[in-house]
Amino acid sequence: MKNKNAKHTISFRQAVEATPDIETGYKTGLTALGAYSNRVIVFDKTKLQGSVDIDRCTTTKYPDANRWDYAFAYKSEVFFVEVHSANTNEVKTVLKKLQWLKDWLHSQAPEINKLKAKSRNPFVWVQSKNFQIPKNTPQYFAAVNSGLIPIRKLELN
Image (cartoon, rainbow, N blue to C red; front, side):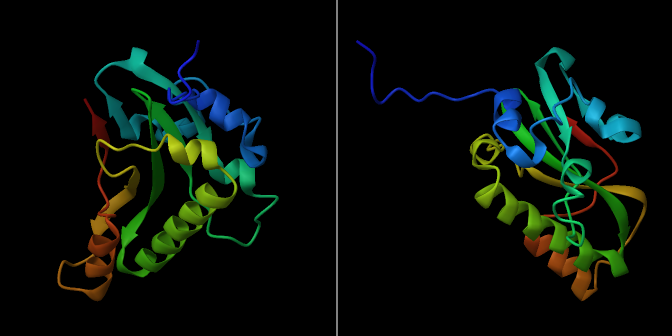
């Protein structure tokens, strides 16, 4: 007899395929990140469980939205990466993208939402160029308060 309380989790690939907006977007490893795949460093590549280009998959359905870029799974946790310029003028845009992502996960991608990382903040802003947000500006404090401080590379053990 099966335990009714047993927690059944689906894989990242199954979660992507169960999400109509991105159901055909699953890619192995970090390949969905394309040229930005070198911005994510993982300790054990065998623990990578795939990636998806959320932005590309959702362009048609949400053409005017500030869409988030990527999601990938590592060690059964999903991380969401936005590669974007890190300057004062772009903070507001990235925060809009974060809100779009959270709303989208809640309403359109509940299976992926269940898999988001708990070991650290699952939402990561990777700067596309240099960091140009002075630490004494309202934009810097807004980024800090949202948990999004741009980094050069995401490194996961």
